[in-house]
Length: 84
Length: 151
Image (tube, rainbow over all chains, first blue to last red; front, side, top):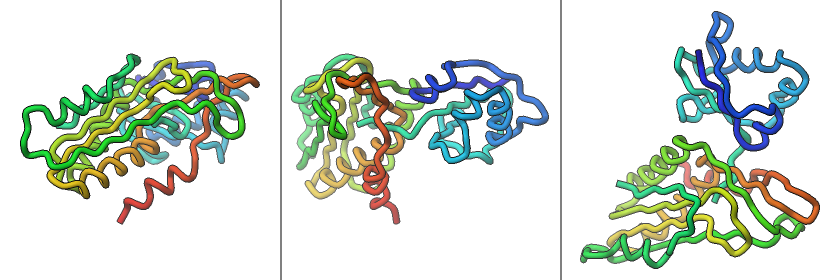
């Protein structure tokens, strides 16, 4: 299993803040996990559409599409940050 | 060791800065920055603001930024306090304090920490305006400000 977190506008877009999903042979990287999320339906496909500005962190470190996933990982999706 | 705090409560700038220098005689310079909630943004009046963050990662990101500053400049202490939750115009959002033997290092590190915080620390602002609530968009000028410290 991996824990998925969603923040800010992205959390509102997908109407989910936290969930756990199983890791399968098809979800070994951030990119393949995103493909799986997009296939959930229109809301998800739109939130993670190509060209949408969002960021990914794995285990609280900034990550990218090629970052591999392992059981127990915490994967977070969020829009570009606006603190300060 | 950087001092990093993420909190809902207001902070006292004078008291926090005093802690950085109290009992020390090696500090020649203390530079600080305080960010506040403005009452207008992108042409609209702002009546309130809510700050969301990613607990855990936020503290790590701020700690990493302070450590990177300490690796670049000759610093004695670094402090970052960032508020989350409900804020209103005039409220303080963030403060950075940096001590060093000399002002050049303190000034530069203070600005660096704010530039990196703006682009790397996972905080998100939602503004309330007369026309409803909206998430604040990231600015390309903030990316440019962080970019100039590269290389």
